[in-house]
Image (cartoon, rainbow, N blue to C red; front, side):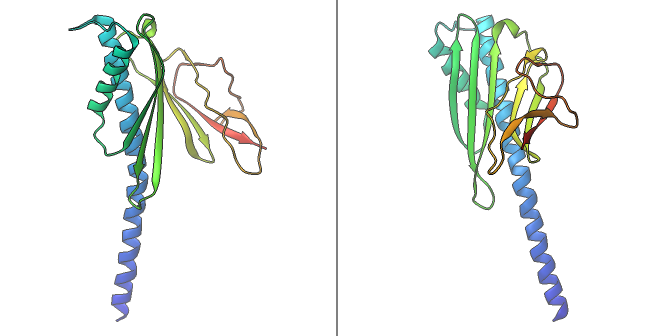
Length: 195
């Protein structure tokens, strides 16, 4: 009888650990899939605009349609995808897009991941590496951006925390405060500072 109780307790603990791992890894998988799909779709759309390989994009609506088609081809999850085109100009080669992916976790909680990408065709020259700019609040990623090296940092909206006032963003592990004209050359992480 004693061994059955121990076995049952161990089984319950094992199930809880597995569920916890699935929840955490599921969030990372969704964020990575959305981020990778967004980067690939923007690259393909701007490459099409730059090279005119097969047809010419003549207006902003065609650029947006081309981007959306490329994005849908690269997303394989069952997330509800919401695409917000913040700017699209085929003449200047500008595409600024925000993608929200809403999904349910293993324990049926509603979660959402947000990725944003801004690209100017003059800056775009083939496939390049990205710098990651991550913004943390209480040890959890608040916002994450993929930027080309040499780009100006994108500053997220100010976070809120009950009973505290937001002071700004500091580089993680350093005393340097974020400024709106910071040029990103490598991966960088910032921590929200509250008083």
